[in-house]
Length: 409
Image (cartoon, rainbow, N blue to C red):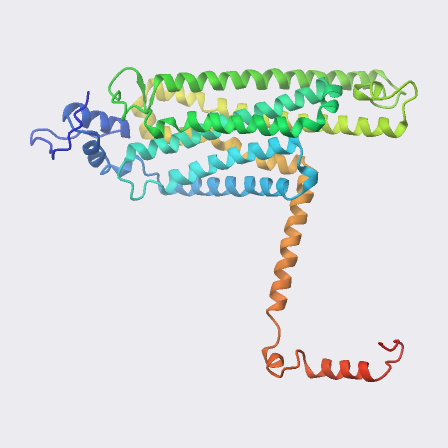
């Protein structure tokens, strides 16, 4: 147990602090060798700002990626919320994914400038890491919801069509539960469930900043979501391939005329218009399912890419801290938050149109306001409300019949 007294303390003359490679090593040394309290260790380690300060190049990269991530995802959310036609479950799930990616951008910005003036470096780093953890947990759950929605839409189109009226309610309940659960869990280290405040920093049950129980729970939740994502998307991919194979075998038959909801939604002599509408909706779901697959592939590539470097950090902690930096390594997990909104805008024409209409409306309002501010103030002082030529023309029009125009009653 650490000494939590608030008495003043100082290092003995014969004791000199070693060169620390990361922030936890600084806290461990002060808490173990000098029987300092947590507040005293905060004060001592806050002088080693170089342990958390990024280099100039890294700060610029983090800042640009964070701002770009926030802006692009905010544009996606604004486009979905601005058009009533897009208020459907699939677009709600896309907005949910974009909102989770916004937190990744906030985490990168916080990592860049949040340490300035911060005298509790351990809490600062824990907050940054929990932002990254929260963004990736919510992003994984958002991908899981998107994958399940695509799976049901492609594999069970009739059920999907019958229960379309309650789809918005189910989507809202699922997203609400997701945000509540992951908010409480992911930010629990910032509320005290960390190695420093639990006084387990020097024990074997602590991994870097977090208790092993927290790491194990995060790993299990992430593994479960990965299993759901892989199962649903592989099933959808197989279904799409089988559908395309049947199309090739049905040479001379209208594409998709005997597939999906078309053969089930009509009677013995189905209406051609109803068939075409059902086929169009089914094809749209398959197109969106392919878009979800793009998200999944990008996410898995980004999540798996840092794993070899993490293995190096575990086996060679000092080398990792000096040349790579654990915080920078963790930031690689957020790259999918930058790619997701770009893929959404490229693959979703309806969303692009909604954003363009919104931007056009904002531009027209700005032009109207700017033109209104250009009214001649001298004309207002004359009390006539307009230039003299316009006044004469108006009077002429009221008193005489202008050729080619009917008189105004």
